[in-house]
Length: 354
Image (cartoon, rainbow, N blue to C red; front, side):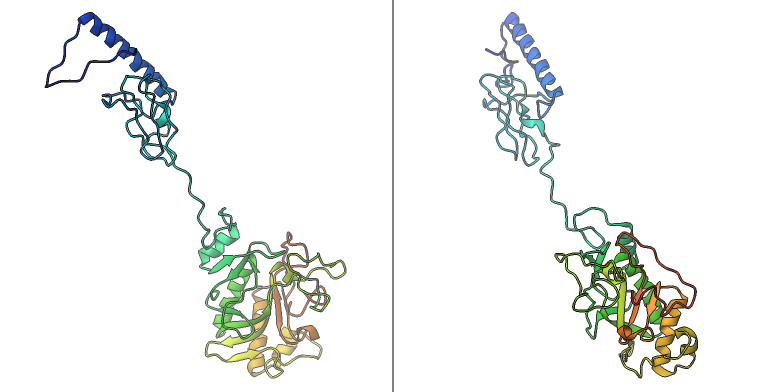
């Protein structure tokens, strides 16, 4: 039978026992106290405090984590399971017979509950909760409103959810932000272009699209935009279009802040140049009205080197209804070399189309 410590007070007095027996009992109680401390040092107890013992003959229990009772009758050190919800241990799992504190308190008051699920990534956060790329962090700091998306061939693909730097980029004549996936690096390029647009009184552009995973050099029934499950196109002859990487845009409409719309496909708005000479030299010099404004716009973008390639209706028939602007060479998505040509580099291309 396990020895016990001094009996509890009764009516304010301590019952006196035989001194020899008392010493024997105290010695046994001290040994059990030492044993309890040893178990606590090994992590077997929810607390290393062996204070006054319960008088109801029960062991401790976890506050939230289910039963943590000791075998009170035998004074067994066996305890219940650790608190499953990280709750504190009720009374440290002590037994009335003076047995060592149970292991039920291994989580103790400092126990940790189940980890919470990762929160949904906010603006600039990766879908899997990991840290966003340096580019995504940069456009987030710039105040770009976007959501991350995925698109074949596009690195750090995003979808704009609001005007970019004060300029709405929409599809066609729509008034909602375009849903095309755009490479993060191209977003920074379009941000700079928006500065130029605002300076010239434009607040919105209508595109014919930005992303299309296909080969160069023009869209057709056989050279169409591939989806994620389509076979890889054979682009061994002309290479890939820069639209494949989300690093290009075709713009047809330019809207002034007062709502006036300029249409590249309108021959009165963009007067084609068919004589000898450069778009930004001989052709620019003879333009007037709306055509002059649009020529000035693309030639200033060229002078500022915002894009690596600009193709206008003066380039070929495939571009009669839009201006093409991009920042990338035809190459796999892992290559990001941006060509810098001697001015002017409007309507200059390594192939028939980029």
